[in-house]
Length: 449
Image (cartoon, rainbow, N blue to C red):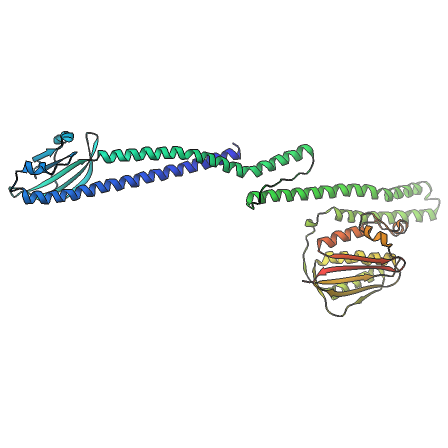
């Protein structure tokens, strides 16, 4: 059974059950109240008649006296201790009550009885009779009118229940449609994606913020994530096939050259080994950078923490100096703190320090400071610089300002693209300024709170 039909069925059954339960409760409470009221009224009436009869029984003939108190649709009678009727008066409509067997009660008695498939309210009250004995004054009254009222109430409640089922069924159908519409839309979107191979999203109508809309938004976010990962994978395959072609060709050429003449010419052997080794290292580095670019930022496990930039930069510079034997000068007046991911920030700094090392021969200067709510790290080199018209393109993948120079130095054109991805992930803003032939300045702005 479909979810829509289940919701429709279960909701309708629940509402109808509650409606029937409520109407049954109303009927039982109302019926009990009416019957209790009939008993109380008959009991009070019997007590009054008993008092009047006790006062006048010695002055008026018993039958004449009782005839004055006989109910319109009932019977009044005197019953002795031996269950013998001494006087009985009935209305014309209730003559069959005379045949009912009398019962003497030592005290007061009131109840609802059934005789000849008809219901009556019965009340008995002890009195002193003319001969000084104790007898029961008993009154029996038909409650046919009350039963008719209860019958009408039953019909009304049944009719109300049946009529109320119509809006219940309609409302349950509307409710099931409202609940299943986003789910249906999601299923249709999934089928469309499956058939077309295109990523699609659910469109929302209105501004509701319930769980169903939240589920749809989560679905759209998942589609965004899948599309981003898919595009990154496509880009990775395209970039890898494009960029790995050259080093693989170089390796293949030198390997073929080694195979033909390597043993005869030692100089050619050394040159080939060096070239193969260099290209293999460049392929490894480029593959690592491509894999990083293919990873979605949400999968980077960013861990933000408060960092003392002076200590952090001194430690990073020391590692870099030991690795490349290049002098790095750090300039800062006060202690500066920032919030970032330590490992990602170190990787970001190494990319720019490595670029400064590759394209300049002099020392590298690093300035640390604060402006407004941001801390900054400015890296300056005295290298070849970048033309003004090239600055906007340096973060594009595989873009090289000087293709011959960067290829010689092993650059893949991916370093600054990786830097941009890292900076966006840890909320670092990058500004770059350069003067051709004079050097390049890169400033990283970090949140200081």
